[in-house]
Length: 204
Image (cartoon, rainbow, N blue to C red; front, side, top):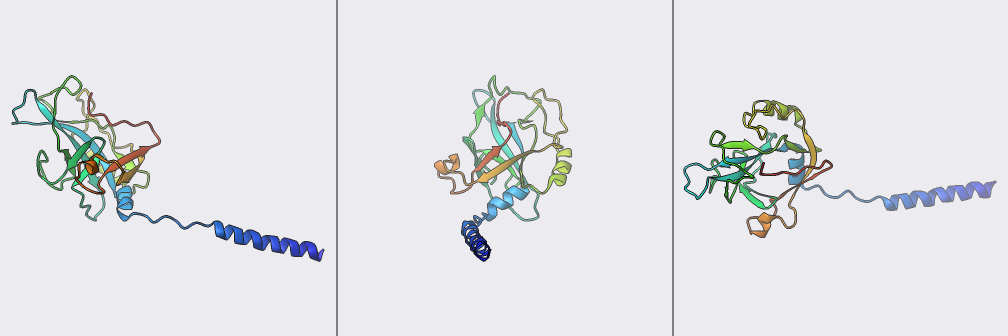
């Protein structure tokens, strides 16, 4: 009986030591990554027709509207998304610096897939805002969306939107980002990883 108790006691010690050895340290959290996850929404993606510019056909730029709901500043002025580089520094096609509206550095000609509509200079192509699963400002986001006049569907009919949010994992500093490839920055890219099947399209 004593041998059995001793054997069990030694086994428990060995098991305890083995479990302690298996404990792995948690990876360090990137402060900017955490900040974006909790506070920044990809609120809208838009097409804006350029006015006062002479081209073969009417031209447009792409816009990403990133809203920071934190009281702290987020100082990014260049982001890479998909195949585009976007700036929010008041240069090029960007109208106002640091307003959260990032504008593509390239322009594009309206076509059958992105038809010109003189009655709508700015059109939304994103049905609902995209946020990280760790986003903490859902109430403020819905209040902000309720006051946003531009979001509309492809027929041009205004949509209230914003009351339902797609939860995704927003990642910064992705390898192979177009902004990195063009030498614009070292860690300014945004990638979106979602459980749902979501595709951001700039055409109709």
